[in-house]
Length: 206
Image (cartoon, rainbow, N blue to C red; front, side, top):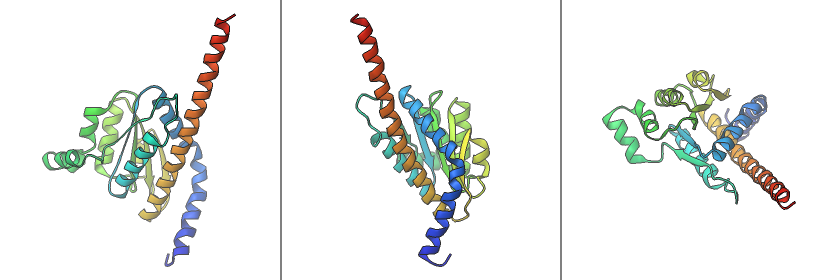
């Protein structure tokens, strides 16, 4: 890959292969909408570029999906508190920075979204193990061959590329589409709720 067009062409090939995993992406949409309507949390984390993707995604689903009359998505990114992350890294170990945070904020039936290009980041894997022990559903976004994360998570999308930049490109594209679909589903949920209430009120006036 020695040109801009070459880079883009390869991303396009990867996007074509991603269509085979559409069902898993839509499962993530369903899981987030379910948590919103049950007042459960969506907790997201990753390292490096994936940390930025996690933070971006939380912004999108916490603010960008707001729909009048609908419950909001309760989203939290474990990379955003620098003081807490560095405290756990310094006092315990870097491998524990996400798992230890989860022990303080995770509720049963929350949704955890773990992002790891390699799928083998020890701190991500340890956090997913802790989340599963705490009764959460775990979704992984991975690259390369998926690594251990693809096998450990309940659901995983794997981008079969060995270029981490391209993996991160597609992760962000996936999560942008997810946030838009979540908003659409919440709008549909609200319309259905209004129709049900109108039907109930109509019966009550008879």
